Amino acid sequence: MENLTNSSGEICNFIMHKLYLTMKRLILLFSLLSVLILNAHAQSLTHSSEWRNLIVSLQNEDWQNANTLSLQLLNKTPDDEENNIGVALLRYMYIHSEAGLLNLRKVTKDEAIKAVQGFTGKLIILPSHPVSLKQGFNSIMMHNEKTDSLFITSTNKTATQIFSFEYIVLDDKWHVEDFKNSVGKIYRLGGMLKSISVEGNMLPRFRIIIDQGIAESEQH
Image (cartoon, rainbow, N blue to C red; front, side, top):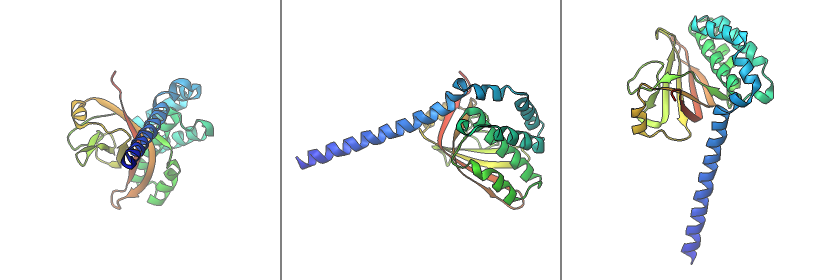
């Protein structure tokens, strides 16, 4: 009877743990997929002239202007809308432009980390990248040949300057075979920023760790 009681308790604990993980995934998935549709501010943000100017600055690698514009937009965001998708995208744009300034020696390592460390614990969404089995730049790769964590080396357009090493710990493991079948497809990753630091002296760059990560296909 005692063994039966213990087994029932273990089963109950297992079920509760699974329910907890499921709720975590649902909450984050809602943040990533639903807020942009439901939140009018997010829609107006991504359709504003400031947003368009920011995108042009990023495409032209005008890091100072991109940095200024993204910060201005972030500062306009009400506190109760910090989890909408537009703001999550803005955080990464600001980090990326700060990395560009760091690479150009326009800011020091201390200045760079001070500028972005406030994003720790908040939702960020990365730009879309192709899935790849080969080591390369600006692509989604397995970390240590495992798919529970993914890795991106983010660079400038010509891949001559490394801006950040990005580690994404998925909340729901991407099965290896599914990952291999997704090679060449475009995915967007996001999650909660667990930590961000600066490493390297000659070639300083950010080291970004994201947990509670989700991967969403851009191809439907």
